[in-house]
Amino acid sequence: MTDAELRRLLISSPRDGRQAVFDLYVNYVYAIVWSKLQGCGSREDAEEIVSDVFAEVFRSLDPGAEGSIGGFIGTVAKRRAISAYRVLSCQSQTMPLDEIDGLPDSTDIVQETEQAAACRILLEQVRALGEPDATIVFAKYFYGRNAAQIARITGMKPAAVRQRLRRAVQKLRTALEQAGLDQM
Image 1: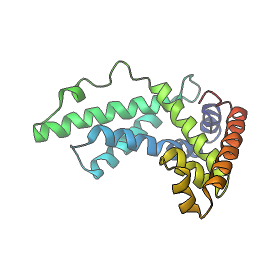
Image 2: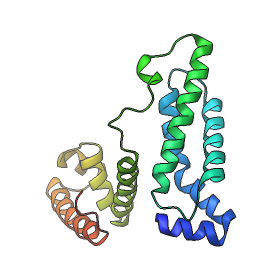
Image 3: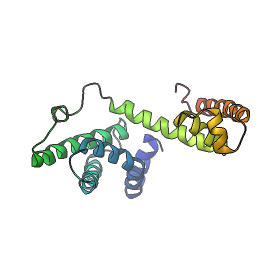
C-alpha cells in the first residue's frame, strides 16, 4: 500500500487507516525499537515502546501532510527507543556513548523506508515465481548455496537448477522493471 493510498484511507475511514498503518509498519517499528534496546530492557519493554510509538504517530500524523509516512514512523520509533534506552540504562548504570548521541547524521530514514519497501516487493515477486523457482532463488541469493547444494535440496540435477535459476532471474528482472524497481 502506497503512502497516497494510506492517506486516502486515513481520511475516508480513520479507524481502518490506523489499522492499515499499524499492520504495515508494526514489524518495522519493533525492529527499530529492539535494535536500540539490545542489552537493555525486555521484550515487554519493547512492546510497550511500540505501543507508545503508534499512540504518538496516531496523535500527530496529519493525513493531508506531505512526506513519507514510513519515514515519520521510523523517526518517532527511533526517538522513543533512544529515550527509553536512556531511562532503562540509567537503571542499570551502563550506557554506551554512541547510543546517547541518538541518530548518526548519515542515517537517511526515507531511504531506509524505501529500501524496506523495495525488499518487500522483491520478496513478493520471488514468491510469485512459484515452486521450485522460489526455493532455488532463495537458496542461491539469500543462503549462498551453489547449484549442487540446491539440487540436493530440490531433488533436481545441477544443470536443471542452473537453467531454472537463469529463467527465474529473467522473470524477476522483467517483473521488477514493471514495478519500477529496475535500479535494484
